[in-house]
Figure (tube, rainbow, N blue to C red):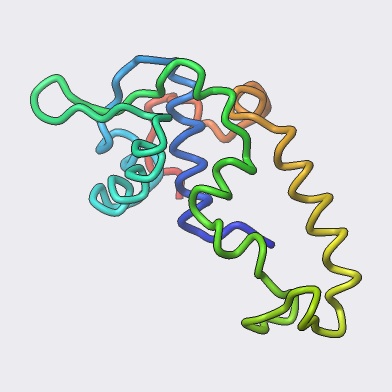
Length: 148
């Protein structure tokens, strides 16, 4: 259960906003430039967290996105559920489309407890916790841009 690239980008953008602080508006273009991503792609990735109430997006002059108060407590598991809920419960280590208790692959019994432990670990790490850890300089908003 590795994070997809789009989930990784969403997480990185949320961490960037967490470092900026709640309710500080940041242009999506600024975040996209720092991440080395197309603006429209990043804007699309930020739609689900906005719909979930973690972000507020304001269009037009003086607009931007900001982390809503309390959203710093969102966990990695919450982000994974938001962006990849279909993969969490059904993902098979061998890549089979259906791998559940009643139609399990040969590794299902070994993978299920590992997946459960990983999910629990992701649930113990919030955006605030991660934002306080050692992060790449671009994520700290040093203004150097283009980390990729």
